[in-house]
Amino acid sequence: MLRQNRTSRRDFIRCATGVLASLPAINTFGQQCLTDVPTTAFSLPLGVCTSYDKAELLKRLGYSFVEESVGRFLIPDVGDSQYTQNVATLKKEAFPVRSYIYFFPGKLKSVGPDLHHEAILERAELALRRAKECGSKNIVFGSGGSRAIPDGFDRDKAKAQHIALCQKMAPIAEKYGVTLAIEPLNRGETNFINSLADGVEIIRAVNNPWFRLQCDIYHMLKEDEKPEEIVKYGQYIAHCHLAEKQSRTAPGVKGDDFRPYFRALKQINYQGGLSLECNWTNFDQEIARGIEVVRQQLAEV
Image 1 (tube, rainbow, N blue to C red):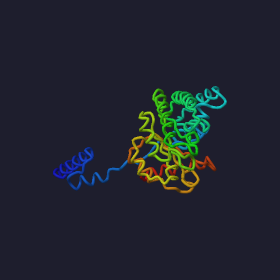
Image 2: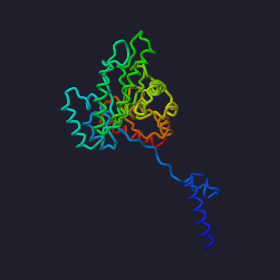
Image 3: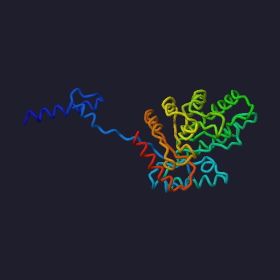
């Protein structure tokens, strides 16, 4: 009996040592021990692109944050008094606004014959300062209408214009500690920066760690962009969006399988936010179903 106990103790020690060293144990018992160690399910902070008045509902359903609009929350058309009220509500609810969409409107042109770079930079300064005041992590830089290249305009010149603007905006983001995440959009929405590779080309030219990449799986699906692109450019990704391919519906409406893309995010050890940016038919029902579907698919990768 004493000999059996000593043998079991030695086997246990070998098993534990194998686990801690993340190396296969040298005997059969140790190998079985490693096989039985449970793996941690992949999970991410989940949010919804919507107005902040949905915060209580999102909190109750288990979401981690709201993704608001720059023009609605940070720079409302009705003026600073509304922004002050928004900040007061944010403090009261204590539910974070992690990120923002709709950085600036299409009428402010970043490329083409008539540029509005100064107006864009003024808006960026205010938006980024207020995002910091709100404790937010990033602003998504999509603005497809602004960067659409006019017919007949030289594409290389347009790219140079856009890079020049971004090189001026990135230091503003750095000053406030809020990341700007450039967002590739599908060709149905704009004709410039339509893939992760396109976005990374701009990022490398800007060369500032506060100017990063937005990964929108909906746009990737529309462009038939493979999950391997996430792995290829993973070091640049700061934030993610999600919707189903056909009609930009919420996860669970059409039944899209996002697991290949989630598997790629897991492979790069992505730990940022993932927001549902969708066309809604029944918001309350679809966000409730959406978080269930996303959590289940994340756990299966």
